[in-house]
Image (cartoon, helix red, strand yellow):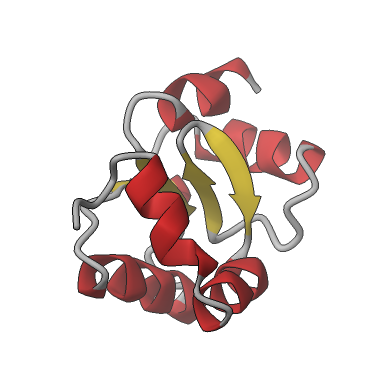
Length: 102
């Protein structure tokens, strides 16, 4: 859990993913299109990936990826991020966390 919290707090936007996950790809692409450069941590390519996946599940992220943190705070998975984007609040969250500037 400490490793996830530490990595999540190092950058304004952080996404935990798996390289083979199509929803992870979609969420990363959305962030790039909004102008953010999130830190990406691919759990299937990290030696501590399984440990971090368990920690993410402990935070309530099921499925465990994608798991999105903005401003060091767990925001949710793909369903949550898409909902925030549709209602217009995702962009403001990224601006408030200084992940994008407008």
